[in-house]
Length: 78
Image (cartoon, rainbow, N blue to C red):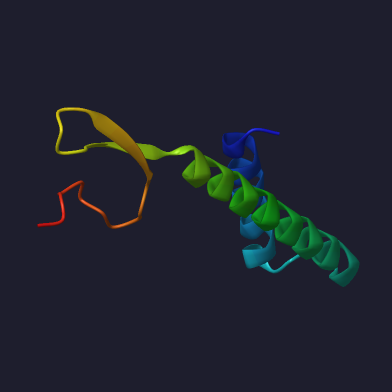
């Protein structure tokens, strides 16, 4: 299941739960599905973040790869 498919399904599950008109057993099944989808989405996001590298200048005219850091604007440390 792609990230987009899982996200769409999670949104549908949440919408059904928020309506509040599902029988208890169905609501529990939906909740469990939502938890599984949430974990899948988290894993996919973590995998994507691990694949993101930032190319930065090494000071000698070359480049080096460094892991992406959230919130890093790509500015060199001075």
